Length: 539
Image (tube, rainbow, N blue to C red; front, side, top):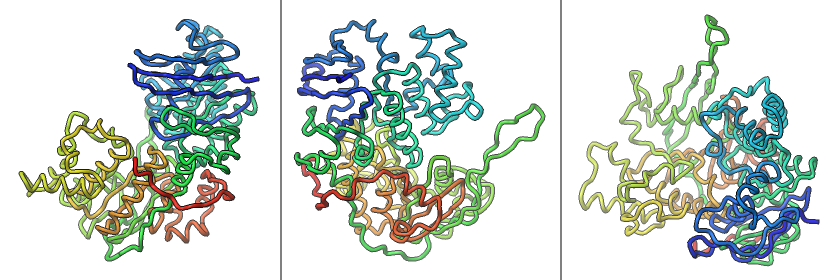
């Protein structure tokens, strides 16, 4: 018998239709996946189940949980169900957690709100559930704050909050987005164990078909507020009766046509770089210990070369990147770009900084929403002493937008008028406009849907062939790194453990850590039919 039964659910917000006749069932101990691109209705289906819909929402159909129609319940009764019977893991843990409360207080909150235990018992339960999700109290005391944890650790806290009262249904909305492969594997194993071990029903929302294929019992493919294909996961992925399902699958394994590298003279040189951070004193007058985030790292990037940098959270990638960009000083070593030092006389060398640009993970968060695209794209010109003005500036903006597949007319729009993929194209246009010597792509496609990601990778490949780009591509997604780089650098605990050509590294990794990363990465079934990827012209 199904624990959750959604029957012909329709939903509109201010008379705009969002969901159209959604029907699905989840039994106890079953893992059901909802997949599809952004805007397909996955999260709205989850929010409707949780009773977290915005004002102005109209609903039709029914959502039965253990025989009770959730859509007809008043808010006080829904509040009693949330957390106790139905838990939810939200996509972004840092926004789901209160930055001014300790992790212990936030896990205890769910328990105390439902008055299930005394404060002392709730504290013990918080320690127990945090230990279960891999945060033992000896290393992660209840007194820690969210900002003191990594992304994967914060996600574990969110999961601990959701399962503190052992709910019968858990909804996980993109729980592994932007996590490194080893942390992702641990989170997925944890969720799988909760479903199989406790008999908990799990609704898994994700755009990653590789995760779905290895984890879900049943799969529902959503597009434009409808379920276009559903059934047992293996059957759906083998038959792919709907063209949209096949498009998602082909985009998931898409490989960009990068073309041969035009590697020339050395451009970026990192020589024996180390970076330490002070740790809190254990006693009032005790010596302060340090943590070495980057440990004697050395490598070169030649002009025209495309290099990947991979490693799990905390390995030193971000610290090293900030040092390369001149945003953070190092204790020892030397970083030069085209022979000029990134740091000079204890200060960043602005002449060198002008030759580097960054494309960030979150394109919306990296733009000022009050400014128009023309101003956003032309921001790097403030680094130049002889920045263009007037018609020359307008022409440079138009050329940059055209190079990334957008129209010069888009310069007059605000950033909210664009989709996620279009925003990332604008971010790339901003990086290109001053024709930098080096571009750093920092998790630039990790938060994008698989079809949009395929388009951005193709764009990067086109620009690389046209402009001979030199870039450092930082990512946790090994399949993307394999597609878009000539060489891969693998970091572990602040050190480079492997630095080899991409194909050689993926075909026969030398270091055990590299093999661990590859083993942890989710993969699509190898026995599925392989056909060429065809981009959707509607995107």
